Length: 106
Image 1 (cartoon, rainbow, N blue to C red):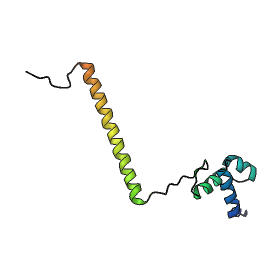
Image 2 (cartoon, helix red, strand yellow):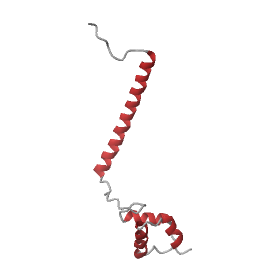
Image 3 (cartoon, rainbow, N blue to C red):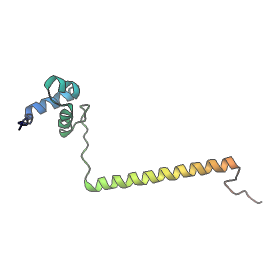
Image 4 (cartoon, rainbow, N blue to C red):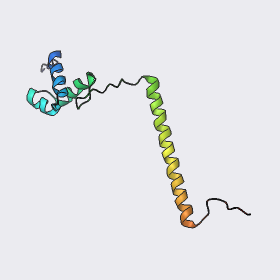
């Protein structure tokens, strides 16, 4: 049975994160140091930084915030559908010459 590789030391992972923060690409570091670029990307994200090396400063969403986001996305999709329906109806009425408002009888 093949022996599995030991995990990378914490110091090595920290150095990779610092190199990405300094502007190096995870793909290039992976080739140079013999590890996988996905591993480097994971280490960077675990240290609160984006893959480009810039600090995101964004905390993960809690359960209530995540549910609110799901609800807002659902409502947004509904509003988009309603807008599309109204746009099609307006175009249909304009094409068929049907007046969309009532005229005054005075």
